[in-house]
Image 1 (cartoon, rainbow, N blue to C red):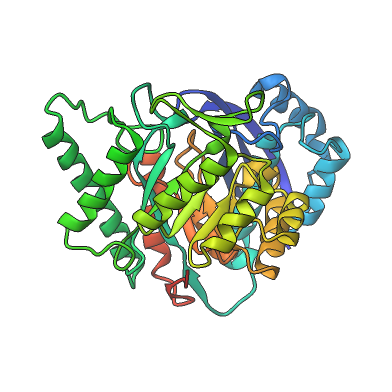
Image 2: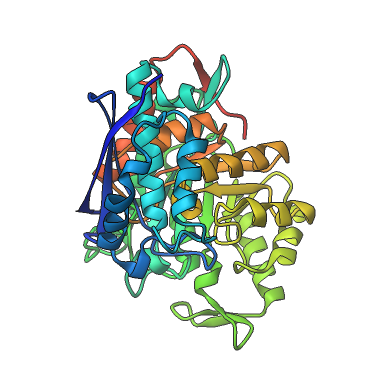
Length: 412
């Protein structure tokens, strides 16, 4: 059994150039697990707080004061590490130590254990003789909180190679669609600067419907049939449009407003017209009943909660009771510790809510979530398309294809 012999942390920077923390966990004086915490731009109201007082340095101070509590623990025992964290910080949202510290410390521990035991991380996290690859889900056009003024209100238009039989083909199809979208945008607007949003999606000056039409056109020009070889997805990120005072969704860039009923119609029309396989946060983060309407209306579409669920098991149980969603985003740092996230995954899998393990808009070059996606039986892995911090996750999937334990793609 490996034992933690030292822990060290530092302040680094994520893909947006914002401060974050990295934690090293060393087992048996030689096996190092190293994890840099990500952060989101579109943040759910109920997710774990990244840092106390929004300062990474505060998390490191707390780690240094309490590091002895983790020395001698088994790094593969996530429950013990989680419980030790909870002795230090019993708050529901990790406001004392910061969810980013919980994220980095627990994943670094399991990586250290993986190296010590010479077992791949995904296998250490989950029992089973066979695993299936989640489909990469990538951002091809960005807007909202992930891109600048003039871009669509819709935060992400995504592509998923739903007809692919291998992980390499799925990645290459996504890359091809992204490139084709870029070509169409350049033809449409010769002044297009080829700017991209936080997650690698193109950031053009377009309205929602124009952006969706171009995404569909790119797939068709490559010879794909929408809904077969390739499918589109949309992250509406509707909480960013929701005005609590007016009780309306305000689409400033497109110049219209939606009542809750109109928002359901707006999302439904897009799902039907573009044959979406995936629709995330089509209504705001507390509109459970409205999500339930969409889930019932589109049984073959992953009606997915992100801001709605924030990788919180208690909130997921509430959603399950009224069948508020058929898909659930899993973001470890929303929950805090990896143990929290795995408990959420267990609840989702037990209730036939399909998992989509996801990156954040402010990312590191770490690739641990590729293993977490496999271990949790996720149907999709939302990791972007371009950018070194995105490609790192995709390249790790290709490396993992060398394991005989992983056979083919998941069934969506």
